[in-house]
Image (cartoon, rainbow, N blue to C red; front, side, top):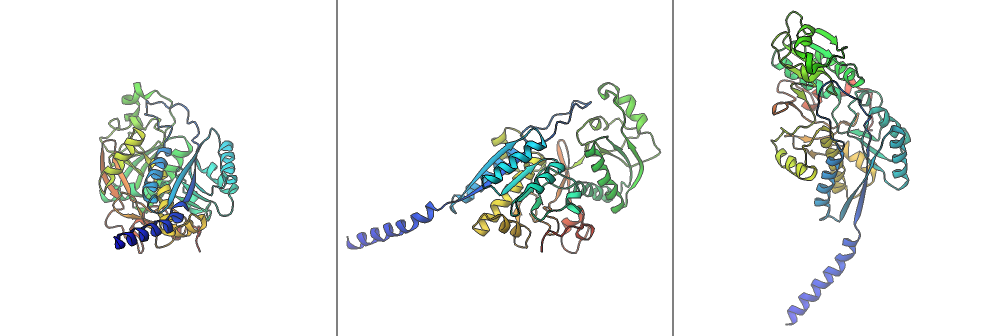
Length: 390
């Protein structure tokens, strides 16, 4: 009996000592900013992107962070702000900064992201989960901006490697009129030179024809040109590209933004535990996970991984940890994901998919790099003027 009383007293003492530690919870507040400009009508009946693209990925990552954090005395909160304009996005950002939030995930165009960087406090950390522009990784860099969405050049380098590997080196490219189309096409032109591809035709799409009625007549004539191995389409919003497959002059595969596409994420990615991530996301959002969802998930999970390792939520400490040698993110892509120290880009494999299947995943064997094979995708350190660490 004496032994039992002593054991009970010792147990109670231990619990009393532990209570203050449990009460002292570390609360990590993350701001999520979302603004996607209205793209206007398109000619094809393309399936529109969900209005909550990105946001639901951030929600899932918050839930994942909380699962780990509850054992470590950490709690994660997501402050969401959906805006109708760039000005409203900046105003929401400044309001959240004044409220004490200094960790942000942003799904917005490059122009809005640049405005946020200019309005940011010195120690605020922004994570780009929407803008693919290469300039943000090569010239217009900021020490407190990192990127979880792959750049245009990462996507097109994945496609360039695949085409070179298949020896489909003569390509016919069609480029749409929007700024996004032009950026994608410019990235592919660079990739073509990098991987020994020959652009036998590089034609702009300038028509306003209703392809629902005229595709079988217009596209064979438009794509009539000698010989080529593949047709590359740069049509980011799906204005005409959905009608290119099976309507080309020659019976050739269609790749790029339509046909077989390089992506950050797609529902057909199921290996390396990805099926479990897909299931949890569909249960949460009642739809499939897309590129922006994955990028936002990776951003919030990167923060959670850093906080778990550091035991603090200081944005400068998190940024330094992300860019250092110790950080690794389990990203369900078959490899540990890390950040490039010179421009803050998350290294990641790029799936090549068609709507119902995974074709391959870049980078491919045979493309060597002295440090990381994943640095064969996108602008490498010698090709970028950015040096955000150090």
